[in-house]
Image (cartoon, rainbow, N blue to C red; front, side, top):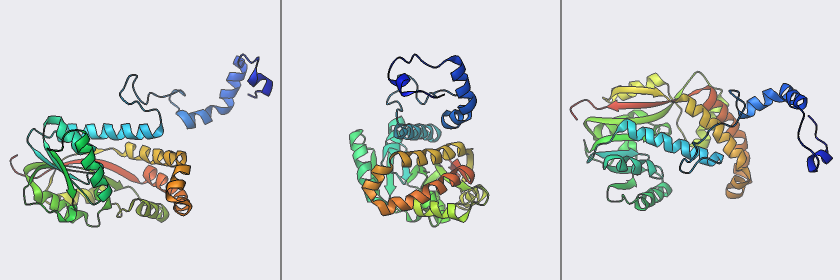
Length: 294
């Protein structure tokens, strides 16, 4: 369908049914590729009246992370008075949500000074500083006594570790008998092109990913029992798509903040990571348990 300038600025009442039909005949596949092919209409990214509804790509990403945290709270189900170790606590909100669930305590650790400051501020803002604290800590060499915690969680942290096996053993060491460990981690599917894997390792400061079987072997070698393993691979693939879209949407701001040289490098890395997440990454939630009576 072609619209003239005169039609666009005045006197235009809309296309004819024939024009609409011809447009969908010609461009229907394009619409399906860009908005979805189930119904070719706007999706419900947030329910009407939902708190802080998603209206931008950034909002959508944040809401997805909040839903993930809510699922972690439900899965781990920390009890009142229990003490959780949050490994790689990030900016602190998951730890706060865990503590708010039933009144438990949380100690968060991170190797990032910036995250440590933000996490402490999050706890203060949410009024839980007495029960939620944060400190510098490395999961491969934990500065805690044996059997110090009732539960532990590590969300997208083990991907960064040079020695996952040691981290599993350290986590198991500080858990009390019967304690649960919730872990989210990437797994490798097939054999990705080397350039895709290199892009991921460089951009996210990660160690090479391992297979699902190898992850379970390391947990077992550390003395942890598997309660369940749930695939969240579709969420991982979608996160790769959203990452690419957000990067494109915020490209100018990224260039202003980090400079043209880094931005030029990222221009080449982001498409490779998008393909890796879609084609060769799995993503699992594991709920593990240290044997013994809780």
